[in-house]
Length: 153
Image 1 (cartoon, rainbow, N blue to C red):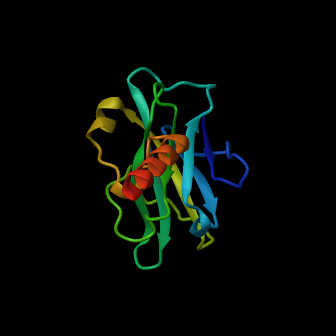
Image 2: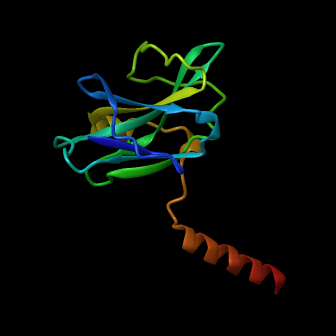
């Protein structure tokens, strides 16, 4: 149902189903990952009125697993890019994954997808540093070049 992609690595489509509505991907060596893409495979859509909240969990030696809401995917928005490099510190918030057992290796993080109603998704607030610009790279480069031309004018 879901896939997970990290640049320079093979696509992961082997999410572990930890509950009827919860799926988890393991991310080894997460300290060297800046962004993660979560997407629907296109084989099974969400039921009507449902979507997926996307969470990131990393091991914290002081408090155990820390879960942070990154954003969401839906049938209308079947993929999203999230920045996880700035999320390695700080406290997590409420999450639907309960007291899951943490991966055994200390450098393994997890990306979780929780199937929830669209109303629930609309009421949740993702961590602010997880947002990735919605502009494409070409537009960003064009704007940067335009700004540098104006600054040198």
